[in-house]
Length: 247
Image: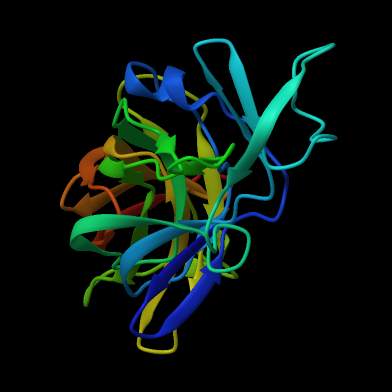
């Protein structure tokens, strides 16, 4: 399965998956999981179909008499023709295109499938497959870029730097907390990247080293940051005060 756009092709998966197309008329099937999608624009999804069969009122047409997906003891009436599906693949047009603003992962691709999957090929004992598949919803992960800068009149305890602080992100709706150490960005700020987050609201805060008893930031933490599908959000903070641990 590939995503295709002006910049070329991105392979989402090479694993073989067997799908009952009829079920996709009313259900959602997760076909790709944890595939990293680079930030760019895409206009097609292509699925290479290596085999299949159609049951037309009890008459079974298959891409091969030995197709492994056939029901037990099935008797094949004739061949199922799938023009170019094994080479260029079944093309699914993404309406309006799909623009990804940050490296993301596909969560779920929901299909609306036509009930007409093929037709008899004239007087020949064959069936031609032409499924109509439309992408109706694509949900992508997003990311948060958290940065922390030292305020102009703020002093840190001896032997403490912003690299000793950590950023923490947790979904507001519930879920596991993710903690990442801050790293020097080379521009006077220290930051942490939280990638592949499901769309939604996240609470962002900072964890101080043991030498720090309390801290304050602008904006105050915990702060709520909204992550949209396929986007990267920058959340800048300024450290406005630090209280050192007592002796």
